[in-house]
Figure 1 (cartoon, rainbow, N blue to C red):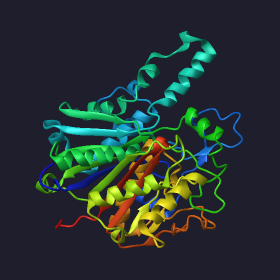
Figure 2 (tube, rainbow, N blue to C red):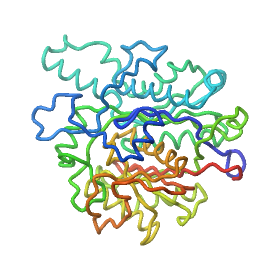
Figure 3 (tube, rainbow, N blue to C red):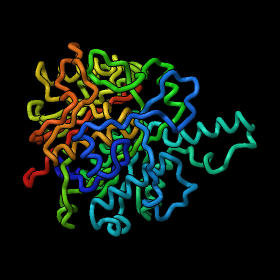
Figure 4 (cartoon, rainbow, N blue to C red):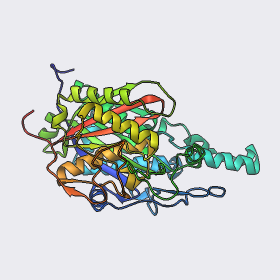
Length: 409
């Protein structure tokens, strides 16, 4: 750490590939409009499923964003991650030469990595035996490659490349890791976020659990029927404030703090008390009081267990009248390791753009949740501090506190 609190950490670049938009501008406009990216699944054979819709990205080709890597090296998730990283670095302005000249960090959160390739390998093996296994997809299934691919694509040699597999909280974990590294002075610049691709394995798993909705995702709704899966990548450039100011960078927002905990209470069900503790850890790290938070971006999966536990945790920390609490998964589906990274970018764009994105598909708020989820239509708002929640299987919780950039601390 540098001093009592360490260096201030700001966000200067955003990269987005999602089912509702590619790039920060398109993504922000879609969030403001309440656009849904849910559509029938085409990524894999859906025979045998009574319903199969997801937040699938259609028509995106990562090739224009790839300069150094061979196409065969990139699975679906790798392509999304590298493209989003290239976008984030380009968005940050003249930065790449400086990144190559000094120690840097790449941290990518994921749930599945290239499990889509693994699905294909299984199908090939069933159809043709081991002789049918293609070598390149087999090589791509190592999850750690997501971060090393980004480092190689950007030409980084003095770099810590880390892939964080903490499931649905992995994006926030990666951003928090980068925040710590920059704040402590271990690096001036960190490229952090999350990426995941649709795969049959995870879709089938949630489906067999009875957690999958038939048509739409309705977080905090009294009649919600479950989650939907999705895919995407969100990458952010984090810099020390001094480094950003010295190079004249545009500053989107500031990372104020974060909290992590793991209660290991239940493999799949969140623990409300533990989630509340994680929120308090994040607020304490940021030096923020609950009444200073203007918006909560909820994990908000639209499953019965998640929404109830998360809402109870929010009420523990914020009382009977918590800040507005929105769920971007209503538009994107659950993009797993990318989810909290995409939500963090959504929070930043909301701060900069002066709006709160809606929770779409909303009909009637569950009285047991009792949150203002900004139903269906975005609202104008003067946002100073925003909390971004991420909850994962195994009790892995990660909460990020983001703030409007101000000259003074």
